[in-house]
Amino acid sequence: LFMFGNMGMNFFDMALARCRQFDGERFNYTRKKTEREGDHFSIKQSEECLKILQYYMNGKEPNDYIFPLLTLDTPKERIHRVKEAKASWFNKRMKNITAELKIAKNVTTYTARDTWTNLGLRMGIDITKISSSLGHSSVQVTEKHYKQALSFQILDMVNAQITA
Image (tube, rainbow, N blue to C red):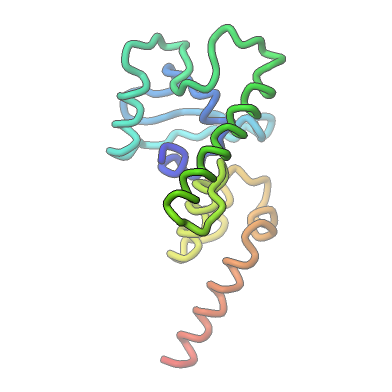
């Protein structure tokens, strides 16, 4: 829910989130994957995300990680490996939960990001805004990853105009 509420934040950025990045209203971070391009985000938190932050930040210091995915003593050179192990753990747990609930969807660490994007596209939000929010280097990257959703949206729009 926190990833979804923060413009489809990816799992690695969530794992790296520290208490000091939250100012009481906004969560501020630079996307790790595209930090060289300067993809900095400042996202006003929803009520749901505020509750999540309050729960996980309780009693922590500004430099502490918000979520229990990494520890401060994790060596820098091991962070990526630890994150991968936690993502794998998360994906296995989600697979078990969806199976138990008889949900025929493969839920992974990217589901929140994909859901956020697809909802935005279905709502008719301009793809350049969505692409920028995702931290993609260009609109073409977004189009490449979401071409099926985009083609459905375009076809639905055309069909609605013709049949109206």
